[in-house]
Length: 89
Image: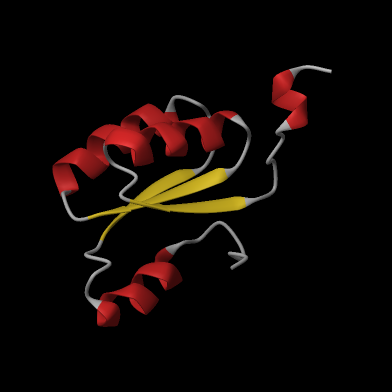
């Protein structure tokens, strides 16, 4: 069995906070490569767009939401923007 089949996330939705840089970016790309639809949450729109372009190369649905997760009132509207299906918490 290949590693990809061991970690098949097809049909799942992943939301990665800080997904536009560093470890978060790497996790977002890895989850997309495993088949999960990916939404990255980040404050920096330029970095969001750069990472989103990389994610779209995987052929998996991906989106970026500009949000500051330290501002509690921004969280619910950001989560409602994720259009890939139900997010499991």
